[in-house]
Each structure stands twice: as structure tokens, then as C-alpha cells.
Amino acid sequence: MTLKEMISQCKRIVFFGGAGVSTESGIPDFRSEDGLYRQKYDVSPETMLSDGYFYSHTEDFYRFYRDKMLPLWAKPNAAHKKLAEWEREGKLLAVVTQNIDGLHQAAGSKRVYELHGSVHRNTCLKCGKKYSAEYIARSEGIPRCECGGLIKPDVVLYGEPLDGETVQGAVRAISEADMLIVAGTSLTVYPAAGFVEYFNGKYLVLINRDPTPLDGRCDLVLHEKVGEVLGGL
Image 1 (tube, rainbow, N blue to C red):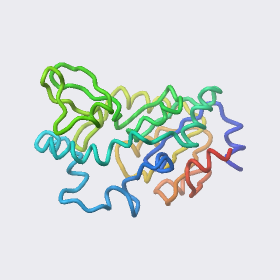
Image 2 (tube, helix red, strand yellow; image 1 turned 135 degrees about the vertical axis):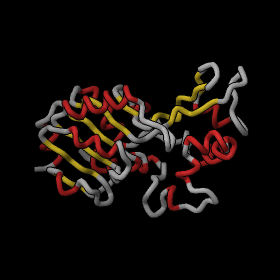
Image 3 (cartoon, rainbow, N blue to C red; image 1 turned 180 degrees about the vertical axis):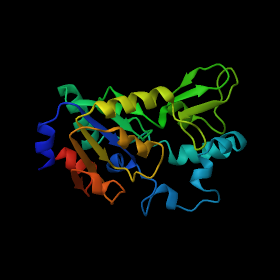
Image 4 (cartoon, rainbow, N blue to C red; image 1 turned 90 degrees about the vertical axis):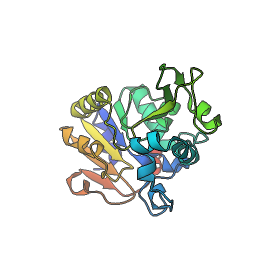
């Protein structure tokens, strides 16, 4: 059965995506050959993106963050646009994403569970005032609030727990789905990768350039680019 035929039989689709969903928008992923984690730095990206490093080396954190984590020029690709279209048509229950780039919302998706937060929300740790990603990008050194407090991106750093409310919403959506499309993720980052276990619906589909631990359990596996697959429907 083709992906198009499966989709035609379903009314409660949930899309679970990772970094590979945004690569066609020009945002590099993390673990492929040319990914962020294969590049050479004096300190590993995993360390620089940890909560401990944020507080102990804040200026170095922000230098790396501005350079590598704020691709504000990126635009939604065919995958983001197709998912927003399905939501408008009432076929898509939700998007669950590991990405922090906000491209699903930019494409028009409304029900998006951002497991790892978003670069577009930034909060003063002293007074709670919110700041945009553009403000962070324009700032120099350590971004400060007008009250003098340190501003922190609302992204989940290594060592920090996922937001409980976001997790509950994502798990609920996946458990209610009749079709789960897992795309653009290596399924190696936990606890996010474990969310697939809550799916009890009709069709489990995987779209990813490289093989994953989930391949053998799926009803359909497509080792292709996500945008090309969804955009071609």
C-alpha cells in the first residue's frame, strides 16, 4: 500500500519530526556526516548546549548559539506546508517536533508540541519578560533584560527535563492517532524517541534518509527526503 492510500484511510494523523524535516530549509542536522556534531570545536556542541555550560560560560554559550542555532533566514519547506494544509483540512491532529526553529508555525500549523522548546521564546530569568529570537541575534555578548537580568532561550538544554505539559500533550496526541508519520529523526535521542511506543493506531510510517531502529516495525519505510515525499503527494 502506498503512503497516499494510507493517508486517504486516516482522519487522525500525527506527525513526529526531527532535524531532517528542516534540512530542506537549509538548516543542518546534528548527526549526519556533515552535521553539527561532526564539526570540530574546542568544546563539543553537546557540552556547549548543556545547562551547566550556559551558566558557567554564558558568553561562550551565546557565541556558539548565535552562530549555529539561530537560522532566522530559513523558510518552511514542502513538508511544513503540507502538514499545515492537512491540519486545515482536519486530517492532522498534531505535529510533535524535536526542532526548535519554529518553521511549523511559520507554515501555518497551530497544534505543535515543541519537545525541545523554541528559539523564538526567550525569557529574563529575573523578571520573566519575554524577548524575540531577533533580539537575541542582534544582541552582543550576554543578552540582558532592561531590568538587568540574564535572558535564557526557552530551549531544552542537555541536563534539563522536557516540559511536562508539552510531553503530556504530545503523548495524548500520539495515543489518539490512527496514523503516525515519523520523519527526519534518527530516533536516538531519548526520551523523545520513546514517544513512538504510545502509538496504537492503524499505520506507522517512517520517512528518513538513513535507516533507524524503528524500520523493522513500520508498515511503510521510505528512505527519502521528507519534503520531497510529502510535497509530492
